[in-house]
Length: 278
Length: 311
Image (cartoon, rainbow over all chains, first blue to last red; front, side, top):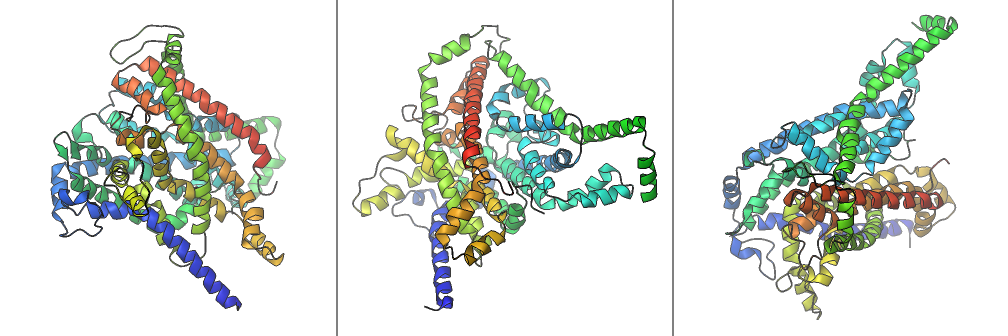
């Protein structure tokens, strides 16, 4: 066989593997989409009908009225954007100090940061709940936003690995030119690390957007619910509105799918473990 | 400017150097200050409070009193506590190795250089983006003993499918299957690790006449071990904290017959449904000790199997 033929066969095999595996993973979204367009009676039929007939677009308009969808969407957006902003402001700053600045206690602080990464959230969950109760923040979105402005250990770790891989030469040059450390960080190092910052920002964005436990704990009154918490309202004692639940789930999933599709390459290149990527 | 910097260095006297050192300390801590405050307020102090609570009968409703080791003693005699531990260990022991195997395999597939990869990567990531409440419903339908797609397909080839989520012995394997669907996040981390492996290694292997299998065994896997190590630790910690999926699947009940009561679900129930916060804090600390011990073991063994580039 000629090398070109072998190459073609390899490529065909690669696509075959990808398509078979994809079929398994895409079922989640296919089903979500198809159920969101079905009347209640057609949902649990066997064999399943992937393409509903008739297509019930009205599920969408009914769904966004069944629960105060726009309010929940607004709440979700505020929490997601604010907490992502918090991460972008705090984490690279701290990570940069771990990677490039020298100060007493740095080693210890970094070690404690790594240790904190291993602490199950449940250990601090109850005292934090009490702290936020004392502050009068329970029932508001503040417990889901404010801590992010003070850094998240796992993101600090990932960003530190990235900063470690950036050369010192630029920094030295800027310092000789009389730039302050903060200016060096803001104008040189931060822009260089933008793929890593984007990666942690995306992790935070997706985490906040779909978070269930945080809102379950802290958003105690209905007007402050997020979409993922509000989804539960479609399941009630009277019966469950599956079609509507899936319609809202589809609406909520679409924006992050689009985001991931366009950013995946930068996202993946921003994560590094070796610390030697230049 | 450069001249000025030179002259400062030349004329550096001890006190000036001391001042410079002091300055770098101040700047360093200024950069680290948000996290120093965050660490103190959102981690260190809550942890200390949590230790204290674990020795009291604290609840939101009552101040509670100091009871020494009572909570721990009660826990060790609580059959549901042991049940939740064995459920959680069962899940972890099967899920973590499987997720590493499939995670690495999928990442290697998604790292191939063919057209349209962005679409495939997005597809593999989809289940992690779909809300867990919706996923729970999808799985209840897929795995329905009588009308579900999975048993329907099994019936086609003459197999009488199990009751899946409805039966005690199949509920946890079902959950493991569902969780494997959501390994997109780990795959992204593995993909990043694969991207860190320099092409030169593969070119060298190519020249030596290595085939795909040899390249995988001798280049890819050894160089991926730091990332596997990271995902092993994080995956183990995550598996011990399994909550949302079993919680939404069973509406917080852990049915059937408590076979789906996982450690954190039971902790949540004690703390936030019965308001036994002291009891729940004791549970949290036991969890912390288990996780720390396991992490320690992984760290010790890692010297044998984790290879770092350039070392």
